[in-house]
Image (cartoon, rainbow, N blue to C red; front, top):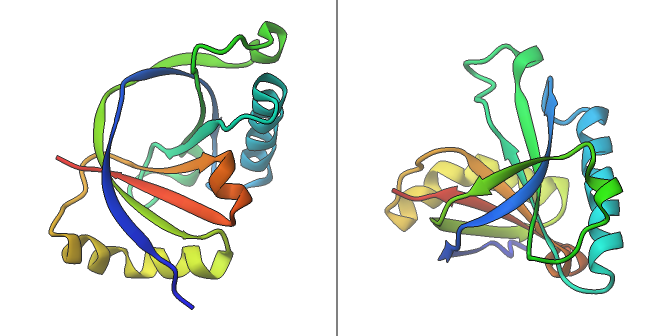
Length: 154
């Protein structure tokens, strides 16, 4: 059953802590960085919701796979973080953005189908992509078995 949901929303500017991994997308190194970020989030947020963004910064069609950059960002919600947990993290500003959100089941099959249908989803919404695509991990959505992909709109 296809449970794809699509909507637009605005994201407020905020700061974020991030880890950056270089190399082919989807490797064990990426998973380790994500798991480390999740541990920091669980430790800092307890049972509260948190947001992590996964940003593929380079297009694998035009950049050598060894040079591909993936940034994992934990949003700073003015919560006190364990500073020792953040020693490996950089700090960045995420600007205000207007985005198209595509929510799908958090399964390999549903995500692969979303990428296959991506051009037609954009066409149906009458939008074009600007910038990179982010995957948003909100604790509440992951717990509900959902993945969210954010496409920056012009």
